[in-house]
Image 1 (tube, rainbow, N blue to C red):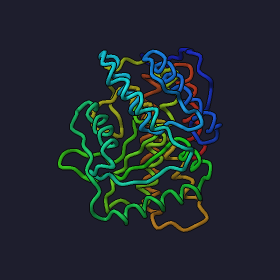
Image 2 (tube, rainbow, N blue to C red):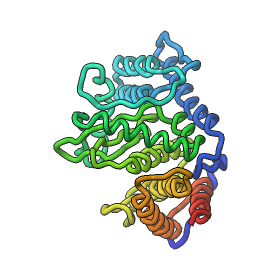
Image 3 (cartoon, rainbow, N blue to C red):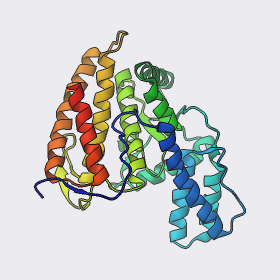
Length: 322
């Protein structure tokens, strides 16, 4: 394929390239998909429970829902019903996001099991998370400051973060490969960030927006694909050493668009930053990689109608900045 191809799958043209869309409606629509699926499972399993729509599903609700589906597919009805109950019981009041540290104590057992299960599903099965032991308070302060700066720069972006994300968990190093930050479709509403004393406040700002952007894009993929390239087709990516499928390139492209936006806004802030040189370097590096990714996708992507629309909106957003 030497050019992008557009296929119309009937997706509403919502521009997610910035935070300027109806955030509350979008999140409610995504949660409604889970509610309807849980209603169906309750009916099919004969469970004497109801979805409490006065509350919202937490990331634990999504995690247990996916374990329920997996168990039912294996015809383990008893275990499936258990995870269905767990999903329903982890709906929560509409509160602001929480920040916590990963500790292997009894109170965190369920969270750790879901996180480790999700990491095991990763293709190389070698990524781990460690507990936060040293410099716990200092890294939490940096993360809190990063959240305050995001709100000062863009209250609507902070609202988007609060709407999509239930919890940010700080993780530590492990003996093997460990994550710098992560989000998952199966654990919708959770962000993991590695707490390292070398991390700057800008590191936390960038990685919060990075993972939030993945989560936002997951809502689009709940309805339709963005590209139709086969998963086995791999491309050289400017931001990683390994070859990436087109879906991975699309996610990176979308994430970089939003990171460029926040880094640009930080440069125009009316308060002083102690990481200005770092910000400028990160901005220029991300812009370069964005345009390299743009060219690869423009040449090779088989877009759906919505996928092409959002691709073009991201390009427009970055052109307006650069």
